[in-house]
Image 1 (cartoon, rainbow, N blue to C red):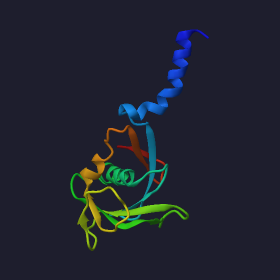
Image 2: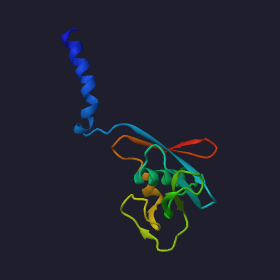
Image 3: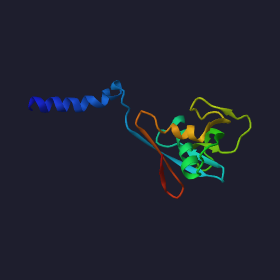
Length: 146
């Protein structure tokens, strides 16, 4: 094996291990199913290892791109738990109507009922610098990108 080829092979093997050391994230795609329950309430179903940030991002995509919200709040109506729409899955119920004990949130967790973000803030969580792509899938199979 020639020396340049050996160096290239070694770099190809080691680069994925060190990519975060240089400040680059790993490209991941999260496709979060969204199930509308009525005109103001929808459920984000956990998928692809999505965490709180991705769930809020998905809620922001749905609120801005599907519901057409340009301002207003998104609230957690029911914190992360058993899905109401898909048996055997976990989900978070979001709503555009204020819920009891609502509070402005500064963390992206989805474990507390009543947390809220503006629709714009939730949608802005999709634009991180870590190269993670979030998109939503509607019940009709349509994929909606941020």
